[in-house]
Image (cartoon, rainbow, N blue to C red; front, side, top):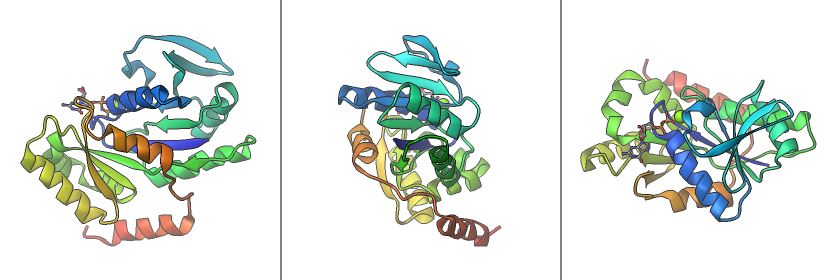
Length: 223
Ligand SMILES: Nc1nc2c(ncn2[C@@H]2O[C@H](COP(=O)(O)OP(=O)(O)O)[C@@H](O)[C@H]2O)c(=O)[nH]1
Ligand SMILES: [Mg+2]
């Protein structure tokens, strides 16, 4: 089972993008599950399904959407047993750290006969609020960018070219190895790349040494 995480600060457009991505992948024939913090946020025609303690909504066309029940690993095990998705797309809480979530996902292997694979970690950065992000929650956004494989400058339909450029520069300064692209859930720009990243690419498994290095970088920078 492949786990794909879409990180980003609160309000950066994760839920909106996730729904578009799930719809697009379902149309391509993928069996998808979505895990979010709050199913109530999602307004979509759906019917509730409850199985094995997993409270979920089935969204038209073979996509299930659920809230984390118990631990994240337990939720993955239940999804595997109940729905057997090829790809689980996760919207972590706005303050989650991507590498920690990788490890949490791998814990599920001890609880069921399954192997977890990771899609590249995607981080969305809201270009329309880049000034606020840099001022108010810079450290957190830096961490999400540093741990990303692909960063999307999001809401490019509504941001000024200056804000888009500033967002790109910020991302490149924090994580020079990340691929940077544009995304808009309104116009659909960038969605094809998201599909490719999630379906065709793989990101390394959790590794203590890598996390140590990320932490070292984080805490050796200016205070
Ligand atoms: N203009 C524009 N607005 C967006 C886009 N994606 C999301 N939004 C809006 O941004 C707000 C926060 O989106 P949401 O998906 O709930 O963010 P989350 O907190 O990261 O899940 C909502 O009002 C969305 O309608 C986008 O691509 N363009
Ligand atoms: Mg959300």
